[in-house]
Structures are given as structure tokens and as C-alpha cells.
Length: 237
Image: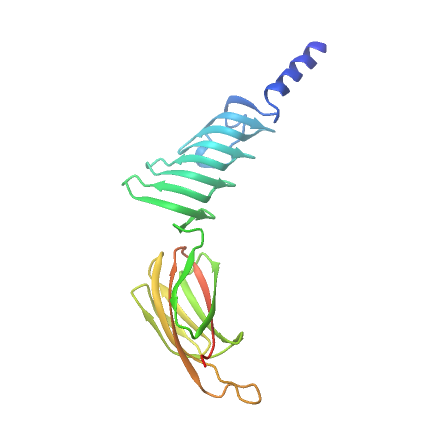
């Protein structure tokens, strides 16, 4: 018993975190991502890959693990030759990294929920707008369908828009109501411009009196998905 206690204390001194480098089949130290769950070499904790390690299956991964999944910094190599070097979270690409495709194509920038969002952390940007555009709000609602719903407000309240047009070849208007203009997007990332007229003048009772102000906005969206863009207008005196 004394010898066992001594050896256990020495182990803790060498590995304060309680993990120890091992070379195991994935069934002995579990890797939860099926494509790399053949063999595993590295740190193991409570029966799962945890810490620094290397996992090889159909694909391969070398880097940091947490609770059986790539988590932290690492290099993932697909069977077809594609390679991603960068940050992971719970088994998905998340954060900054570089994807080099087998054909030599390179994507460098940021990922979110395993999807490339562009060279900037922010997946959207207003490039230019008229002074009549007070402020804008971009919200990604879902991964599909790939479209943008444009909504308009005046002094923070929904208002009608007319003569809505798309400039550039990023998409086409597929549905219009007084309050929402839906553009089907051909491909992300995109850069384009929208033009419109928005009802702005209220009568004494608080209703709209039929006066319109024109505006336009040039913007960029790099992350694919179903987006809602709200444009709040103001009247320039």
C-alpha cells in the first residue's frame, strides 16, 4: 500500500491535471467524432480524449481535445486532402483559422458553428448609406433558406416601403409586402446595394400621412444563411 501511494503521488507530480499520455484504441480512450475515431494517442481523462492528442480514422486530427472532441487549437485533415488549421469548439470549426483545399484554394478568416463567415469576425458590414438611413440591424435567423428579409422602420416603428430595387448581381426580389421585401441570394459572400422609398410623415393622430423619403444602402454579408435586415429611416431637415 505504501508503494502504491508513493507511485500515485509521483504520477500527480508529473501530471498535475490528472491526465497521462497514452497510446490507445479509441474504445479505450473515446474520441466522439466518428471520422477520427480509429486510434488515439495522447492525453486521456475519464475515458475520453482530453488535452493534447492525435486521432486517426477516415480523417485525422492533431491538437487539443476536450471531453472527447477537438476543442482549442489543432489541425484537421480530411481524407480528400483538405486541411484546416485553427480553432475548434466541441468538434466544430469555431474562431480563427485557415482552410486549404486539395485544389489549392485557401480560405483564411473566421468560422462560426463550422461555417466560414469571412475574413472579418463580423459577418456583415454597412459600406455606405444615405443620411436618411438612421441605423441598421442585421440578424442571422437560420442557415436556410439563403435569403434576406428587408424590413423598414421610422422612428423605431414599422413603416411601409415602395420602389424597392436591388443593385448588383447578388440576388433577386422574390416576394414583397408593404413592410417586408424578400431577396433570394444566389451565393454568399455577397456585396450589393438596395434602393427604396419609405413612408415617414405622421399625421396628428399618429398615423402615416403618405409622405415618403428615399434612401439606399450598400452592404456586405459573408456568412450564408437566412438574414433579417432592418433599416430605420429619418427625415433630414
